[in-house]
Length: 328
Length: 288
Image (cartoon, rainbow over all chains, first blue to last red; front, side, top):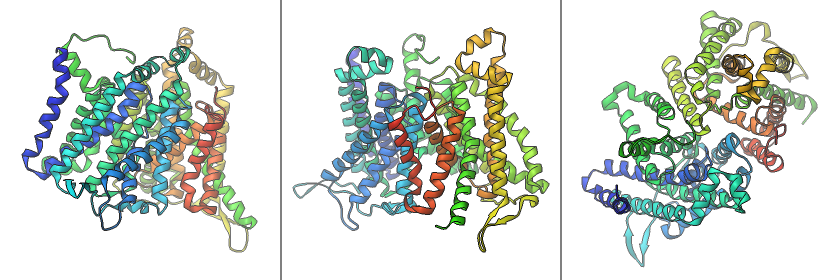
């Protein structure tokens, strides 16, 4: 594929996705909205896993935190303005990521995986055991945030199609932002740290600060996804920051192909649709109740046989298979 | 808090800590020796508890159930090592996380298919079903003391095995240089299989003996797993000594936390972990 076409492709995809609400079925529009939200979430994690070389197993913490932030900021019977509540939710996530980052980045490898999981679990207990966010019952967001511009309602979040477009715009913005960040000298340095941390340090790069910046940015972007998810469901409970959520998003990143932002989008699509299909009672009847069994087996197969993900599969089709780097 | 009450909490904390040690020691050994992160470790704790429940309701005796279940879990451990984990030793931790995460989902659904989703109680063996009176209205169950005793015995046996026997020497050598050990004519693959099966049997055994106290319920493994991660982080990866110290610390912190500050009890262990991370990122007994 020539480079001009490659540059245009994301815009074509966004254009096609923008037409999706023409299907005029709230169910499918909401399903696709979920795909877009998970794509934002997965891209934020890919920045850490695929580009910075930090495997976080607690990324749901930031996703859930933003959801809870929205639930706590929303008054009981009126809408909160999106203009300040979204930045505030992202800010809360950035702050939490900065604080936890200072601690977890003192560790590497297996430790890092366990410590990120443990901190996410700590947050889970904060919301589960205290009255702050309604305990284990969670909290409702009765009225969705308002997006007004000088009295004029720019986007009505109660409408499935308008909310879908908002999610699409935010996904495209996240992609663009990460694309720019990763193309900058900062992004190049991150990849350098992933490949050889000691060498980068010897070259004079402040490795810890770079990793902390990446960790904070990643947590903040996960916040966007969490905010949107809370808006979509109108409800938050401790499950949204459970480790199953962290596992699912890691699965999406690897399924799509880590280290490729578009892979996260493909992965989110494949994962959400697969989940929907496997748990479809009309198709699988009683087996649909135990869909996690099929999902578990699928995840294991991906881990064993598809380490480069769907994006890697596509690359292999396009060009001659090259020796896979690193982990084989 | 009077003395008898304090004593009860102290014994409960130690008993909980010792039980955590059984699960965490297997986890830390598999990390330290084979370099594998096994998220499904908690599932074996659950499998142990469910085996204890179903076999004891079949045979009518928990002791018989445990004697039957231990070989089963050892076989399960060996089979999984041969079929799955062996393919992951050389792979990035990322794929180990993913594979064992998938394994958790599979175990949970199989549990639901085989044993259902209900909560079950397991009877304490008649011989140990007594309590020791401490004051007029406070007493301490013998079964809990028995658990602590069994855990201490196992810990001592584990220490002896690893530090004093020929097999232990091979295990330790395999942890520091796999290829060298193999060149010396030792079947390292077999040793890995044994270590893995031992770790799994320890976790399952913890589930079995704790079943009468905790009862048997879905997802019981993940709670234990995450606490054991904290134990391993605090103690230091691969250090059995560290696992013991950290288990007791966490057992006591959580037990007293629940009595003294129930509102924030769930968070105490994580705060403890954060403090250790600031002070010694490699864990209390970890190598820098």
